[in-house]
Length: 86
Image 1 (cartoon, rainbow, N blue to C red):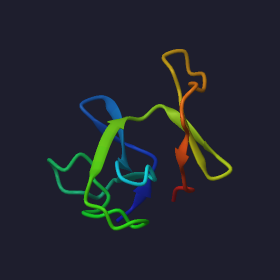
Image 2: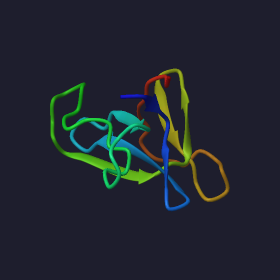
Image 3: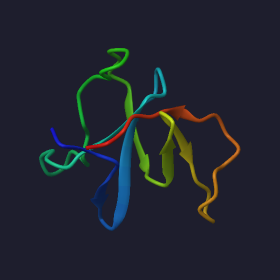
């Protein structure tokens, strides 16, 4: 696995997160075709299998992922745990 922020899927950057504990998981740029960069089968933080993807638009700052809105600004929402990439 090569951990990156996102992978390009049809021109859209995609990133993964755990829907159970909300940890930002990034993507695996070596994942097989058709897996959309899914980095793991289970969350490495809580062990849940409930992983989901989203279009990547955000930033990691001090270990927290802040989603961005359509203008590239931090949205007013609950940030998720993040981790450094690479």
